[in-house]
Length: 578
Image (cartoon, rainbow, N blue to C red; front, side, top):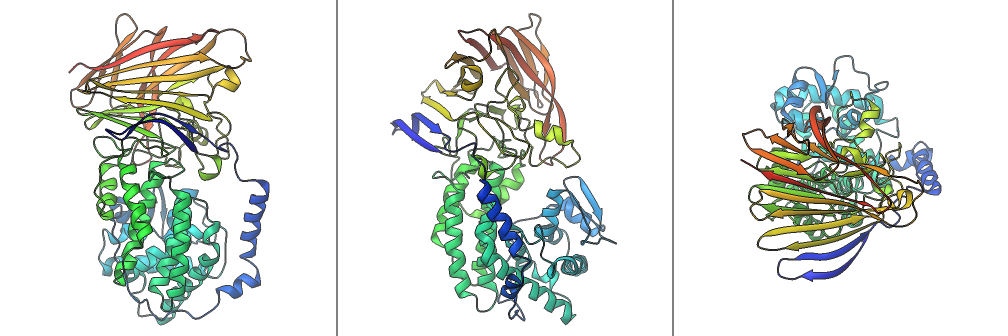
């Protein structure tokens, strides 16, 4: 993604005008790249790779780092009760044979990463947790310590596993059984050698960062690891360079992925601290950029908004990661590459996706959300996106999960019931939005954003332009959606469109007598009024994926209309009445 900046407002640091371009956005991994990756994974099973994994294993760790983050209490309690729980999926530990176990992909990653150790340690003493952790460890070792498989030995999972094994060593190495202890430490040494040679093969973003964090942690905590540490730091610097944009956002444009990346660096820092060393400057500098970018996508309650397949991560989880980072910063109001615009007035927060979608090769489960917005009033979310395509509970039908990625699942305009950017079944995004033009202006009376995208030009001959004006007191949001003719129209006749406003949980809407307005009753007693000059306004069913990945029944306001050859203009207003 590249950027052209036309004017800079030096008074407030806001770009008044710019263009964001999606470079190579619809190109996923090439056939050659896929074959190379497949070949690399096949080499894991060869005698040559097996020889690379051999070597001395440590008799003990040099140090045991702290885990700076708190786990999930419900998941931890479930472990104490004898079962693994993740995103609504539960499996009994008793009788669990990991050689034939086939859970959902998300559950499998949770299990193989050993992230459950954090959950267990959050609710149990060493005496309570060690038998459970050692039982699951023995099951994993029996199934995967010597048998290299594509999932269990994925480099990012080995990176996370090394972080969790070392920081929760008291839970997995308390046994007096020397044979068991040697198996754990031997597996740790083999895993470190494996990830040494495969970290750069992990997918860009948090996964590659996780793999290199594991390399560095192994270098710090396994005896004789100084060369590995230096090698790992060079790899992590590269991984962060490809994962982050200049303003601190991740190139996948997923706030949830950015939160995960911050958590990885914060966890790695404890490995340095255990050796009385400092986190390298490049990683600390990355933290100082990531935290403001993350805060820029939070609502007033400090919980994350729902963008690019992520759910509304609760404020307490965000807060503990931010606190652990040690970075104090204000939310980034305008992310020049990250692409999210943030307007704050009074108790109102407006977040706008004002950039092209992520390129296909950096994110699975990307969403066609260009020019969508979310609006909150204090702790209440008024307008949201459905969200959760990558964090929903696995019990949801696959078709519904894929539907969460569409333009219609976001609070923006949909033309001819199509997506502004093509949504592919393999999780990638195809052709569509290539350029976003943006103008932002600030004054004492109001803040104004005007943005347009070309996602409908090639197929329908229209540019979508959206203008949003938030008054200084935060009590009024004026909007205008315009379809401007451009290029050649492929279909004659009017083009139907729908402008959707997905409403937050427990926001109740009722139409006014003239059918062109609605009253929105917000939890806590506030009332917002909606008015439009469009052809029709209806209230329809919708859903919202909550912070636990569960679907919540909600409502949506839908302005309907049709664009003739000359285009169409629809104005609307959201106003706080009480």
